Length: 120
Image 1 (cartoon, one colour):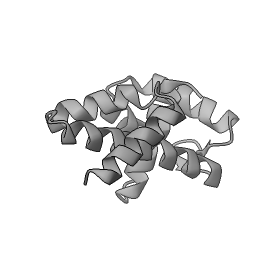
Image 2 (spheres, one colour; image 1 turned 45 degrees about the horizontal axis):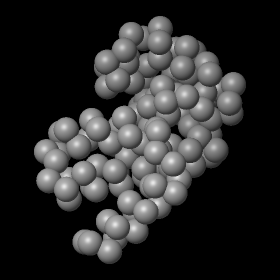
Image 3 (tube, helix red, strand yellow; image 1 turned 30 degrees about the vertical axis):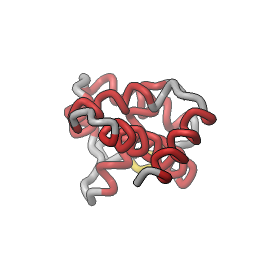
């Protein structure tokens, strides 16, 4: 899955978790993209079996989509927490975590998790 699709699925998951319907316009606003870009991403997520959506209805995640979204969001939270512990401003840490979550290896993420848990 591409970095872009991970951002979309994470955003949808967050909206649903906030008990808000995941509408195309809301996803577009949060990701600062145009609505046709969201529609294209949803089409790809549907092909991958990660999301469902009826025309003009909210976007939903399949059980597989929820698992993927939880993993992506978990990486994001771990990295943000790690950066904040290092003294990075929370807003910058959030932005940097979003970039890092897509490129770090599973081994690196596990070492960061171990470090973060050991240094609470």
